Length: 391
Image (cartoon, rainbow, N blue to C red; front, side):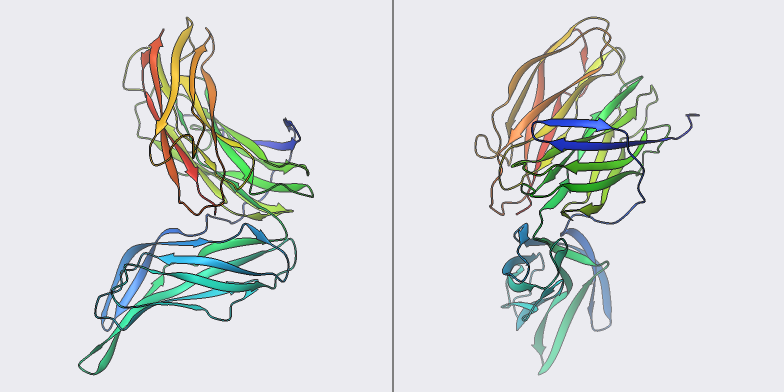
């Protein structure tokens, strides 16, 4: 505590075969979260009103040409009661024509799922969005129609499609805090496909339960992808301050905004700061990693292996990945490395390469493990890698 909060400004430029960090300027905060996901809705049936939690998804192409007709697969996790006449989800479009805005399923359906057909009307360089307005079901009771209608508690975009441009997205990150110094949360920023013109997107850090200054170094700046990249990937590094205070896990956010040459896909990444202070001595731990899957090329989830204090001797370990809902070699490449941290150092980063596809198969996870550790006690031996689906 007692440190003055300051903001680090950086511009990250990604070109063929290189990445550099140079000086930059700060940008104002903007908007842009991940389309779909878990949300709350107010459901009303006659005099009864209650708040419930649902999940909505939209599977769409990452980009289409201006004026193109395209399809979006939709799904709302609303179980339609068995004696209902129908279950209905109502949508609207921004930047596109949507002639038929309803998805209708029969009574007893486990969810409300079906396709929508749209025609892009927004100009090149902008986005078309599909918004879930309401959903519910109706049935006849004693000759009268009874209806339950649910309305999301915020504007819920379930799909976002670039018009002639790719999507730019950010993943999540995690790092073990450590007892002194700083170490980096590494957020992967990626394009859904190669760009034909330069792509720039601004970013800012935001407080969650972690506070800029005492817990991490605030940062603003921009990422620029040069054209000609088949697989574009940059890393935003946010420095986390170590301490010896026992405290709960903390988090912060990195928000993308104001893209040029692309539109926002997943616009907010969450960084988790994992406390490791209860044990004594120098401890070796591994954080979590994530990356947006993409449809082509290669990209990697990155995992920070770190010590709670600078090493006084060489620390060695074995790093490996194993299947969860993600399976190697279909979802990610096998990973098995012998690693080390030299005296005076605190961390090293290991990549696990994921395999892009065009299949809407949801987020998948795999595990990473530290074994055969010498020169330090084991803190957090297991981490989680998340492949974020964007199909």
